[in-house]
Length: 299
Length: 268
Image 1 (cartoon, chains in turn cyan, brown):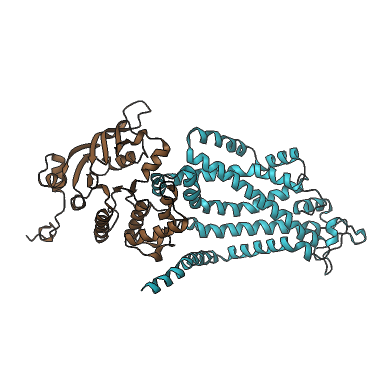
Image 2: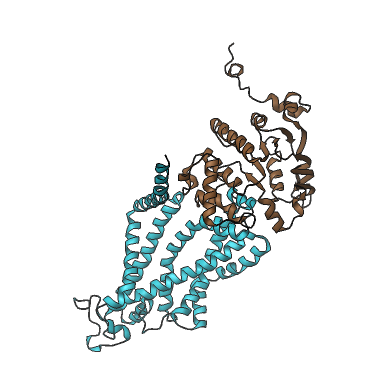
């Protein structure tokens, strides 16, 4: 009797959780597009991590030029051709994925941390605190985000870090609003009342009861936003207030290629396709995650 | 006296001009230690508002609520937290009152963590206490790390009861604990509550709209109608010799448990 009981105790805790994961993955697989999205995202992350070690011409990343081989069309030796300095575009695009992915993730991460904190406090406490805290996001949301990001980035000066800060400043209000709404919705649920009746304080209720229950919309929004964040990073690079040219970045590469269109089209096609693929992949992944986490919103 | 409610009035929406809604109108009652006090009333009569006032989830418009001599609404936050450890509640809806994202172990051990000053325990001791509670309410150790959605209504209500009992309270508010359950499960949960009261010497404040349940569980009963207590006294007195018209009406509306007397079985 007792032996069988202990046996089930050990078997159960994992299996219930594993079962949930299995079920979630099954629902994710229902749409092959999300699987494609996930595959591309994983590939991008892998490439970003390994790129400095696998690119054919690592010396070009340091700014070494080879003007004898400038504007070579795509060939077996230079898959995406070479640019005006004779650098291998394949190498530049591969390494450019690091900046794009890293900045995109950093922007979304900062936006989630700041936005969730502000939104959760505003939504939970309500009243004048809500009024004060939500006026700033309202103000920021009235300005077109790209323009605001450009203004902030220009004020802070160029560089990856400043660019991330600039975009994150325009990004967090959306999360603050989302989280505030979700918190207000969940606040009146019975188990929140139960927690208050037990004597739980606000911090405990927010962290233990409300946040885990509103993670799904945040995760979905984050993955959909990743693509857009990458696009914004590239836009700032394109207009020249993001990353400085020697550092390979998709937007900067595209901007440099602008003057050589249409004769040397390959200089623009490679970074452009990379941006397109990354944005598409994160959107597909986001759609798939939404199907898993928020089944009611499915088609 | 364990709980004494004196002249409690609660009016909602008085901040704006015009008449507010009077949810509780001059309610007075007292609950003896170790007894079960029933509160009967129809939907919207103010039963749940009264429990919220007792738990200080709502403020009072006037009146006092004393728990073992202490005025609950005059206590400091720290004192109130100590009172909460002795005054727990089981909710009506066993589906909505458990957080779907955390395991049964975490749900039941939460009051132990919140009241760690009153009941100091190591995390291992907490897990042992949770196992003990699960057995006490008729569940078993293997349920420890499951999530609420894996349980039936009756089982969830047992989890709710285990959570309420975790910090060894003396007083339990039962806010229609069986109204969301099937009849057969209701009986099981009621028997469990009966047994726990005997074993742990609990005082119950039992809220229900089901007179049969009140008669089965309670020693004393009060009838509330539109925020006013219309009648209160020992259960047998009220059930056998109701003085108020509303009480009489409620009693007449009670279905007879004898199937031969049921209107559905009547032979013309």
